[in-house]
Length: 151
Image (cartoon, rainbow, N blue to C red; front, side):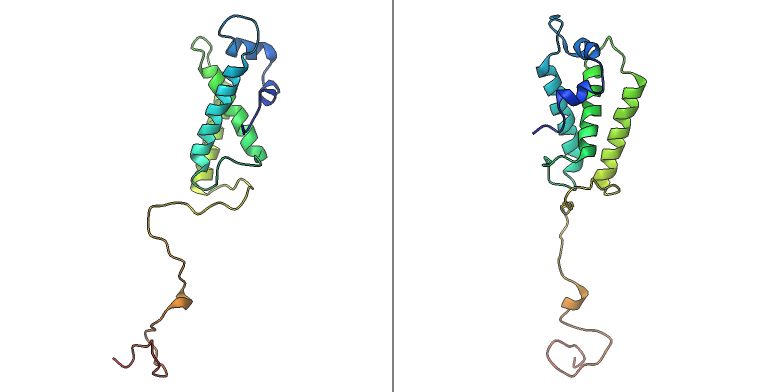
């Protein structure tokens, strides 16, 4: 399931601009396959950052992820045309989206989605707590098993 749709993109940029960005054949219409590819690329970029803390793909999609998907997809549509410079506003939106995703991956920002999964650090993880100790140090005991004061 894609995080955004062509309709979401059409709410952000004009139909004429979308035709200019996607019509490779010169037919005068919006190429749905080009838009779908830009959305898929944006969603893959989002997943690459969010997979560190969340289970992806998102279902349901948080509103902020839909917004970021639109911003990144539009940026990709502009950047595929070498003759069209990415407008400054679109560049800023893309940069802000990436900054936001980096903060999500670092755990500085929550998406408001389900509780994040535990990050995989490659290190040994334990579920033991201080109360699970078998031996105690620094205090005498009743001499029962599990103490070191008799040694």
